[in-house]
Length: 131
Image (tube, rainbow, N blue to C red):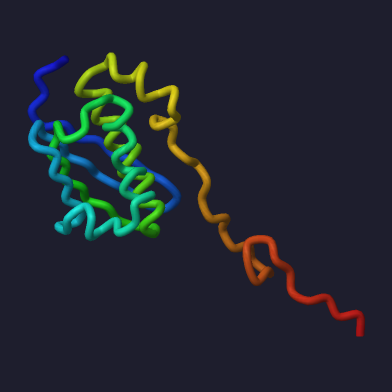
């Protein structure tokens, strides 16, 4: 394990971007100045963010400060998960073998398709009128 005092990484999902700063501590997570449980109210969202720590058996070992922007709560949770997983691999390169098989280092590329000119949406067409 490297003696990294301040780990930082960036994660993205859909239109959400999360910048994470991690320091060794008691497991406190702060997202945009609010507590972890307040910002992510549902258990599945909280588990999304905690997944890299659970797979690496490092739960409550790091204090995490997150700056998340763009997208919605689900996209931000996915972005935070990727950023935390990347920071953990910087902390210890051996953790990559544990985290990677679970797909936590893969950036989800799915994004909203752009609206095309002459269409009401990305693919939708205006109603056809024969007469």
